[in-house]
Length: 124
Image (tube, helix red, strand yellow):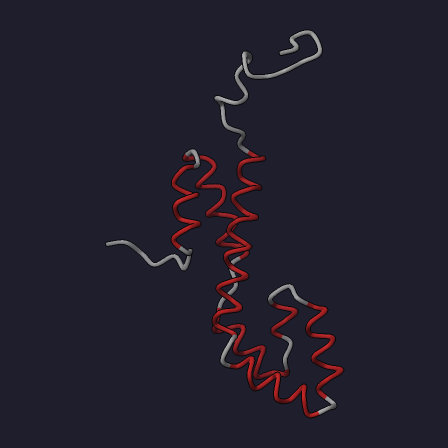
């Protein structure tokens, strides 16, 4: 039985191309950084601080300024129906960041082999 990780299919394909160490590292990083829809909805209820939670503080600032105008209230209500998609988009960015970080932490052994490394003495 496969567990639903909440990771989109494109990211899963890229994850499958990583080495085991890279994949484990990326998934560990992702588990610590993943955004939860339920928490985003709680922040929506509290007063539109969900943009800070989704790492978009500039939008939150604009929303608070507009809040005092009716447009801000309408925007806030419309966002209720878009929070799920916004969380999924942010999580896609997060998993991509985690995969890049994992590749930097655990470089591919093939690309780091002596014949592939270019130095001043060993110019290609």
